[in-house]
Amino acid sequence: MPNDHEQFAAWWNASEQEELRKSCAMGWGKYIWQASRAALKVELPEPEYFGDHWSGDWAYNVEDTKEALQQAGIEVK
Image 1 (cartoon, rainbow, N blue to C red):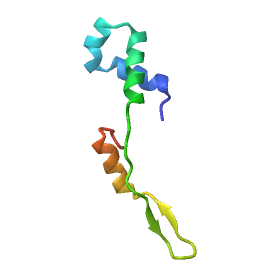
Image 2 (cartoon, helix red, strand yellow):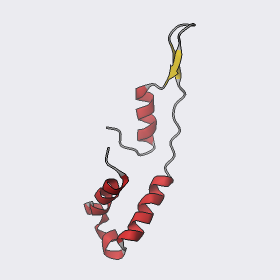
Image 3 (cartoon, rainbow, N blue to C red):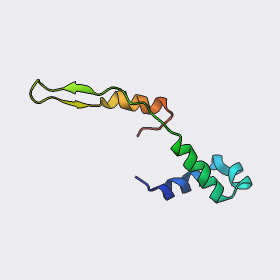
């Protein structure tokens, strides 16, 4: 997974940020990008119990978790 600097650089250099680059210094762009990431909140589904009475455990259902992330506007690969 790319580090924060690589993720910011990819976001800043994306074609849809052209207007932002024209009107905003890169430092301010980084503040905008960081604020957008800090504001991200996702409510995960309830974990499901699996196993038997003696050795069971709790886990998240992968598909339910992907759906929760996608509903929050997060791309899931």
